[in-house]
Image (cartoon, rainbow, N blue to C red; front, side, top):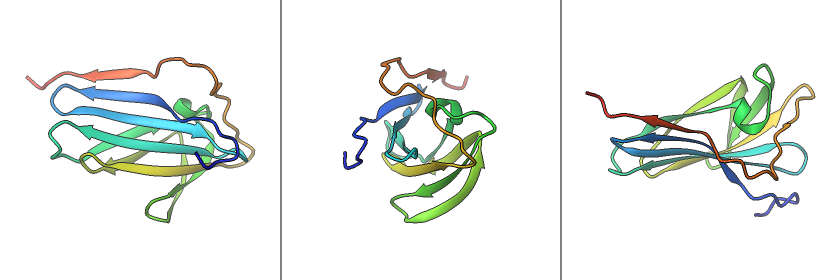
Length: 126
């Protein structure tokens, strides 16, 4: 961890699809109030890209807060979003983002707590 704040990232959301695997959202606060978010596609088959969504509540922001988002590996500003963000993540791939809350918004998440991340299970289609 190269950030001055030195807070370890933690899983804040997981979707388990019984057909293909887990889709994870990891996050941690950064020095200065930004938030790092990692979207990880652990597709067991290794063949499918998946859309992964994370919600502001996952990182301690209010639904109506706005944040600018930058893709750190693509070196690209993605724009300003509110409430949630969706990215298509390649199989066994990840997307690394940096969120900068705008308009005085700050994360209210207690990053020191070890609460388990919510898990959503998706059953196979019948």
